[in-house]
Length: 147
Length: 294
Image (tube, rainbow over all chains, first blue to last red; front, side, top):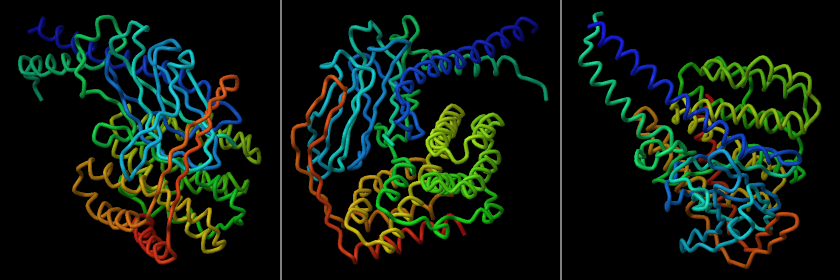
């Protein structure tokens, strides 16, 4: 019975440690994604997260409003360049998507600004950079808007 | 109560295995352990896609830029706080008061900003979002009253901390309700500003929220909570009105400025919204807001 109880405690502490480790990893990745949202950019107050595995995309849908400049910060894992993010405009009537930007054509930049002349529906696709050697990870995005 | 250890061990082993399969995606060898759908800690998830709701501060910024004057009567009075005793109403009104705080901050009304900040803190405490509004943040807020950029940054930080806390504690429903409350208050502001100053760019901005209206209904419905039925019905009626608005999108190539890391989005969206549609939206938004605040 005593052995079972010790095993029970071991399992509980293992679980807690696993979850705390996962959140610590997310925290450090979140810091990486949000560190470029600095004045004159103000955070929209949210971080957007998705678990992605190699070869899979996570999708984020948003509306970018006219007359606003947005900054998108993106990260996965503990270093810049692990995440590929592509921004598409989206026609809500036809569902058609048009590529506007992908950081894979810009040295895997960890952030990029978007100046919006006319309000547009946006789809952001995030996937792991094969060069990162990661098979899975959290894609974390942060959005700021220029004051 | 006596613990039934063998049964608990089986249960805990199963939970532990689930945790192992989902919690350390960046760890070594994690690929073989990942369960693709079980720990997608997303924003607001709609059919596997993350849905970004516009920040109330973005709408407040748009209202300020429209040239509309500050109107305290538009906001939910802080004296209403005592009416909200259940978690659903507290979450929704945290969103409402958060949008109010964004609004007063944009207009640099320091006295009202402090009142609304305190109200947001009280609601956050009731919802046990403790770490989001700690004494240090409160002090920084007090120290920076009157400095718009600093206050905006602190409001953003408080939002970010709340959002993070709610998701980590698996309170996605509270996070969704807060954002839905914030959104409805923003649209309520925009509709009132349009009455005060009926200019096209405000009505267009209201119409542009068509996609968000549909997204909110999906998000709230996905939560699958019977107690939200009345709220969802009101949002669905608002969405029905929104779907009558015509939006036409014409794509144009974006231009990239590599040096400054800026892409200019050149496509054009045309919104056709009639005065009747605006009046209909006004009635539906008022119905949702009344349900939340009264």
